Length: 165
Image 1 (cartoon, rainbow, N blue to C red):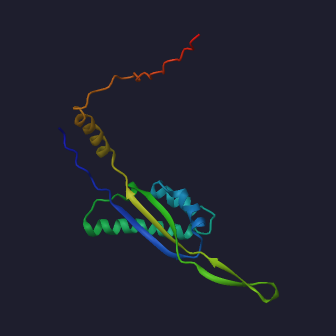
Image 2 (image 1 turned 60 degrees about the vertical axis):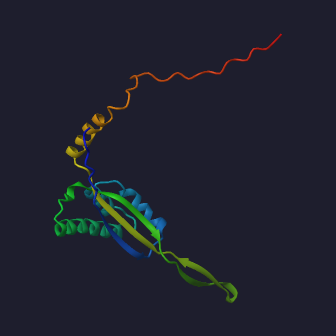
Image 3 (image 1 turned 90 degrees about the vertical axis):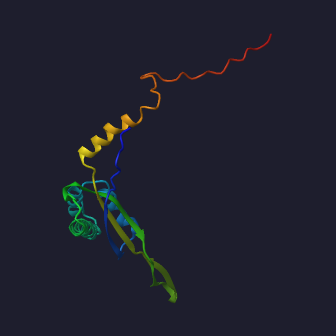
């Protein structure tokens, strides 16, 4: 049996806390960059017209710098060109309660929302490693009986009821 060595995927993260926007508005930009390669994500955020785009670009660049810094400190081999945006989320922060003047001397309360933005980048598996794991996987499954290729199991139909005359 071939033994497959499981590689741990390193993640590098950056946060921007207490940003003056609602998480819903930040998520509009974050959803555009989820799953993209880092270079493409930077271009997407850079040319976005949303107000939160520069803040998210700053957080993304910080996550990339964290990846290069940690790789140099720990002696890891992290290729910046191989990084992609693994997660990009906006959590709700504390709300600021404010008061707006209302007619006849009254006051209405409203809330200003804050967001915590978290961006995580990770390195994609190299093609050589994925090919090695795919080649080792069928060799490990030889104990399982192979199923007939191209044949689906036939579905049993219920017996039809005949009416007695």
